[in-house]
Image 1 (cartoon, one colour):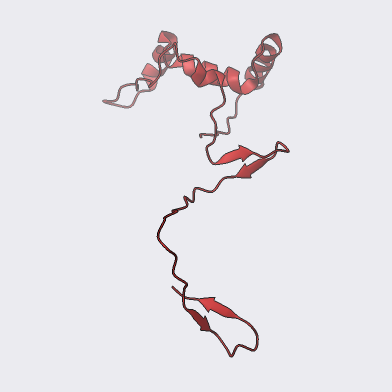
Image 2 (cartoon, helix red, strand yellow):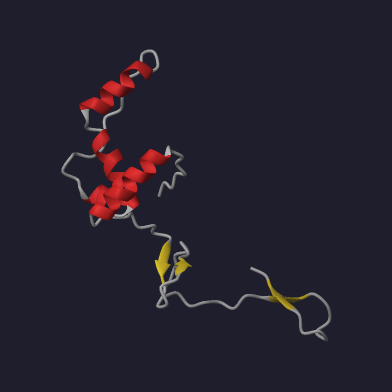
Length: 123
């Protein structure tokens, strides 16, 4: 998930706050909606044309104007999950390989004499 830190004029902040107060949308949804629709806006494209690099074209978005779920809902980070208390917990990507084959005991090597009880399993 892309998490940019954006700096903008206080007028933008005020506008976003006012939109948030007058709708059921939070600030993140409002900013995502603006970016979402800008890609399909002729005004936005015309604004960028004078700044295009030589021999370059504006990219075409991977979404259509009907894909509202893209801006409306916060993307879920698959590596994080809420525990019962609502706190975030990290999820490991480790996948267990369970097999029906009998497990063989690994040989044990002792570092010192068995006095300290320190063992290492090698293998």
